Amino acid sequence: MKIALLGYGKMGKEIEAIALQRGHTIVLKVGETNSSTVTDAELQAADVAIEFSTPHTVLPNIKRCFALKLPVVVGTTGWYNELDNVREACTSANASLFYASNFSLGVNLFFKVNTYLAQLMNQYPDYDISMEEIHHIHKLDKPSGTAITLANQIIDQVSRKTRWSITDQNPETLFINDVREGEVPGTHIIKYTSGIDDIEIMHKAHNRKGFALGAVVAAEFLKGKTGVYTMSDLI
Image (tube, rainbow, N blue to C red; front, side, top):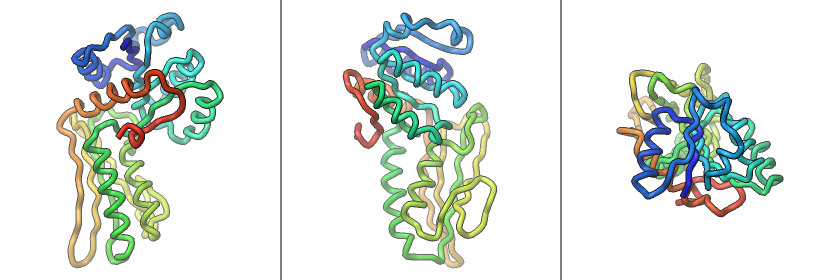
């Protein structure tokens, strides 16, 4: 499979290494130095694009892939407020999109655990709920897309929490403490706190390889398909 990498930072390089190990070819690498000069012909040489750029460039990249009928796997977050419009554009163009807030298998299992625990804890209002997410200092979006997914899962299940925030800490709000330090790949902690005891669940990534592998597997899955897909379709 021929892959175009839209975003060639640390994640892009991890994806490249995994893709090559799995027998694929990287036909295009788009980074800061060449993002404004990439031609349609260069993009069309690929079978699929994997997009890990920035919240500022992701939407134009998605729309360009749609126009070229180039299947695109998107790992960049910070654009989900436009998700409905993107879905509509994908359908209208008969194009292909695979998006996820996190491509790690472990994180997606963590999503399942988070939902189940939230269902249980809805019955116990003495426990307040909060979250902490820790990422490297280069991450541009706050909170992370993974944290937003976790927060929305909790809000869907727990009636006493109606919204999330990184600033407000009133009783109806799920507070997310977003920390940026060092080169941390990603840590997410859900805390249920009462006057008697605490319950915590945590996912801690040791490196970026799990994210990169998931993105390449998603690209393999997406090739030849049309429509919008997520990790739930892959798993």
